[in-house]
Image 1 (tube, one colour):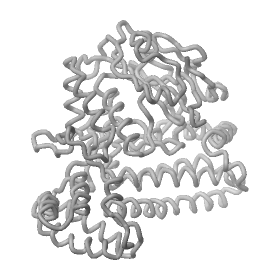
Image 2 (tube, rainbow, N blue to C red):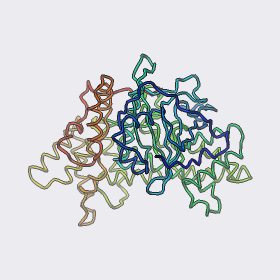
Image 3 (cartoon, rainbow, N blue to C red):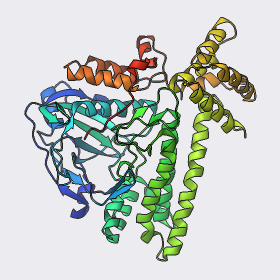
Image 4 (spheres, one colour):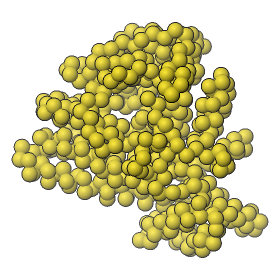
Amino acid sequence: MFPFDNSYARLPERFHASVYPEAVSGPVLIKFNEALAKNLSLDLDPKDTNRLAAIFAGNVLPPGAEPLAMAYAGHQFGNFVPQLGDGRAILLGEVVDVAGVRRDIQLKGAGPTPFSRRGDGRAALGPVLREYIISEAFAALGIPATRALAAVLSGEPVYREQPVPGAVFTRVAASHVRVGTFQYFAAREDQEAIRILADYVIDRHYPDLKQEPEPYLALLQRVSDRQAALIARWLSIGFIHGVMNTDNMTISGESIDFGPCAFLDEYDPMKVFSSIDRQGRYAYRNQPGIGQWNIARLAECLLPLLDADEEKAVGKANTVLKSFGETFQTHWIAAFRRKLGLATDETGDAELVQDLLTAMHEGRADFTLTFRRLTDLAGAEEGPKAVAAEAAFTEGFMPWEKAEQWLPRWRARLTREPERHDAASLMRSVNPAIIPRNHRIEQVIRAAMEGDLKPFERLLEALAEPYADRAEFDEYREAPLDEQKVRLTFCGT
């Protein structure tokens, strides 16, 4: 059923705690990702919903599973907590997908673990639906992220501010090793464990690094580069993670833990949605700096492996940390060049991008709509269609004068592209028409609380092809009305 091969369970006992899911009274399948299951080579009958509900609620343990909770620490909003661990997540085991990539299969909300810290180990329906939606939206957008395999109603309430329906989410990841996993052992001065973990990560994620003369330094560099590239992608779609704690940064370079995350409506570089981020630490603009800060924490853990001479180890680590900003900037400008339809590099491109973003901020322009309307303008032929496309673009700004002043500079820049370059096609491949807008997710959750899952299914359909123009999903392209805007998002714990 599940071709398990559980490498993390074979690590020493101090890396994890053995724990079994707690059965729930009335599991009901909400959603099963049949395509992902096939990719994972799982032998499951999608029509047997009762069986699927039992498995993905944790009531039935598939043969070969070795359930465990992973140990890790982490900096939460800059404050170090030496022991966190999986408080409501249970790793069932690992499978190797059809492409030969090892994947974790994890239940979230399947009961308490030794790391629950007085928590109930359960998940509410709302956060489960949010994570399912965001995970699959990221997959369709082509951004590295954990995936959603299933969601199940538990049939039992969970108690937050008030009783709400309980649910269990099944997450698939390249692995769940985090910066915080290394911090857990560094806090205990367990250098043997740090070396074991580093070797494990290299074997699992970066086997080519074993040929490097300094494999642990190469590991730090690779993780740094992947995070810089990932955060640049986040910014290119207007995404705000909301809780970029070190325990929420994977070593594999995947986006993980979609709690109080959100997408920008109108562009504001200091925008914060998370109700617990009262100081704006994880605001949209701050995410690259936080990514570098998190890599610095990983570097601190790896110092004993980088060089026996502490001063030399610090020098090597600082070289990697310095490169983070340069790598991020390279990926950021490349992403935004594509968003403007540019395939070549010119010195003034960063200024062109930044001036548009400034005009968007001052004009309260919607992030996604602005770039999609610019895409439509790039593809419009001369005449009434071009006039209408330009009007749609500029009317998204209040006032519209700065947008109108910026357009000639963009058009002039496009004329310096190769003659056969198709700017509109390039832009359509990177500027989504549809994103999981915050108000749409909230509408889905409210409907689901009343037993209606049709809005959830329809939103997933709309998000499955985010770069396509599909008239049947036009309403999902629209920015929210002022009274529809979601200004705060909440953690699911």
